[in-house]
Length: 522
Image (cartoon, rainbow, N blue to C red; front, top):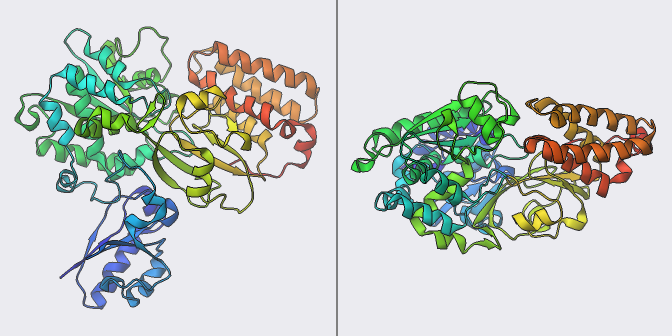
């Protein structure tokens, strides 16, 4: 009987040699006259162990990792295919790996388990159950369930998803749209990509439920162009879902319709902002729109539009299957459900951690991340992407939740956690924030377009020792102007990392530091 072996096929595993590992496993089994069935599953999100190879045994799936192509022969010689575990790369039962076992996986319950493109695998693990329950309800009942869940936008704005859906639902019947913001551009984030590459039917199901809830029959996934594998997987999954009756003119013979297409972004960070995204989706330059009107009232092509992040939509199938209150039972305060935390930067054990809101940063970085990869002490952590503040050690004990973080100037954002050791020059990081904005600004408003350029110039003068005290005052005033006067969060939040450096790491913005700086920037 053939032994089933799982080798991930997501971008991270492929970059680390997963294809060559699979090829060598096939070749090695053949030379040993053993039957092998290789399943190209999705990643478990434990990137520090990729490629993570798993073997089906009578006790469950056994993991080995990280496996390089050069490790395959020794693994086979040690009895990998016979279920023996006497090899240094053996990790025991996959589900017992502490990093994975301690998580609360609601949205990511299937990743790494299934063949991402197998509808049979998806439905075997309660896939499309949420859609089936949705079809049995009227649209208002679906919106009410999302409200009960307390789900908020996981893309960064944290706006209540149910209220957004209610607004679109209440608009007059006619053409409406559901748009998924899959332009995942924040530094240190990859959760959207994992959903799309490792569990694409989850996103398809979530968007279909959204369409049925608000009366939209057309959806678009606005995907960043740097995700070619996600693009290929989504296109294939959409085609299979249509053929199986989960998309199209007659969903599961209900007489109700929803159609879905993927559209590639143009490589602009600003298109992560919902109105700029809509402009780009319409074929225009990605410029931010003034609000009002809100996209829920006048969105894509001037029609009512739901715009949600991948993770927001990916949470919907669980909510509709298990109930909004079940989802709301996880979390803290007004931050309900779970958050996909992505550990990156100078981290020993990088990867995805899904937990209910309320875990502290310190626990995430130490207990899950294992500290820095360099072994040096942690100095700062940036949460929420390149527009998030740099947090000092005094703020690492705070529980991760939207209101708690906002109280001290932190940003949860998309859940990216980028760690820095004590070799980093925070003055360079402050400059990078302004430089990033100057490159990525859409240019529509003056505070963002001009302010970021001036910010770089002022920081350079401070670092060079040119009237440092006066320029520090000028930098403070410039940050305040950008926060108060910018049209969108791009310019309005760019000062956050700069202000955090001014407040918590002032010694790194001195001429002396500039003369001795030798640290890294990321």
